[in-house]
Length: 547
Image 1 (spheres, rainbow, N blue to C red):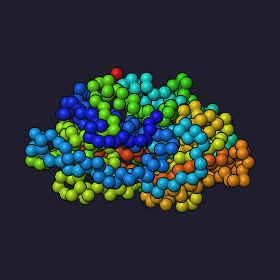
Image 2 (tube, rainbow, N blue to C red; image 1 turned 90 degrees about the vertical axis):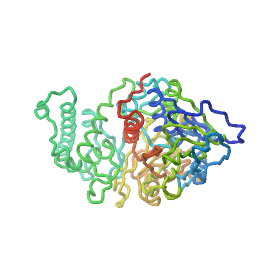
Image 3 (cartoon, rainbow, N blue to C red; image 1 turned 180 degrees about the vertical axis):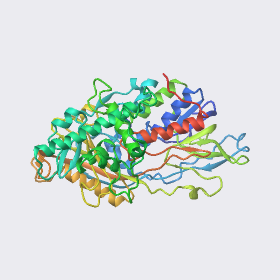
Image 4 (cartoon, helix red, strand yellow; image 1 turned 90 degrees about the horizontal axis):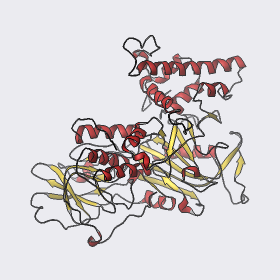
């Protein structure tokens, strides 16, 4: 767990780094930067990895709850602390360009009072976030030995989907499909109709399983079609159209699209949908979901969560890199980039200590504004339009009775007619060491183009899930009855809702790493990181993190 108090001081407070030239210099210890550092160190490159904070993880860290408001509200859009000290023998060969940072959080609103002791609550800056048991990130941890430093717990409560004013379980097996009594339309259905609906869902899952088996590397050419492989024409269809061809009803389609395939945007609105899911991509996620179930004997369901929070993941890769020879220096801001004016390329950094460090490859975290060598630094900042609204809550009891950790999905239009994106909520308990016993942490998120709409969806989901504690509530009475959701609703004790910019990694003379995205897992971030490793750092050769 990280402490969000950054270090700083006079030049004498900073250590002198020796040597002064490296193959790769990385600034910021977020997950992409940490994986890049591990890959570079494993490839035999000399690596210097610095971070202005006193903790690992940067925007992917887990921090004590009392530090959250100040971390989110910190104004990082000012220039980095400058230092004029430099090696006089080197300055004739290059010039220094001041480095600025941008603020990536906005619209921060908190309410309620944090229970004491407040430092026993740990907040993920990337939440809600999970790992599939069969995820490549898990494979990386296993291969690198990083799994020795991270312990995981399963989301044993499974997944719930909000439909027609009720929370319904998401089936993950044939037994779950036929045991679940909630998979029926709002209108009354007779037993025959209900059985037909479940049979169609089971047949769909069986079709997907047949396609996965036929598409596996071990399947011989020509056997795919006979084994039930989905046609190329269907794979190129919008996934929702393919589901309709399978005669799945609206609720079942919502389960598949938003609670299993994890679509973010309203798939029914094909003309205005920002990201329309194809059958090919949908089946790929279903295959990952299916292969995750039962992979580990002690994991229930498809998802796992790291003990003490997601900030443990960057630390695990940093440990791997350090073992392979990478040098780590925390509390070390970067103040400027060094430019070879003749070659028009960046060749290193100037640290807050005043020391100049040269390198062949420079990698920066997402908050740094990389000045263009051909225009003023302010002009090179990209037009950031993509955002994700996030919420962090402390509640009094579990959303799902007798469950510690559970995922809840609100499909588009389930909260209000104008809702264009899915909202996800992840409840975590003390068994993952993020809160005291008897309390629960809940993370919510939804992609958005404007802060007002995103926060509106988050607040609406909170209204559905929780009741609000008032001054009239008697001490210890922490549950109220919901008219729309059966059983009881937990009381909302404290909450923080905010908006985060989604920056994409950029290539050039300097590699810029991405911010946490709106997804539930790390697949997109890991894929873009892997591409950079293969293309820029390892010159197209394959990369492996092997302990």
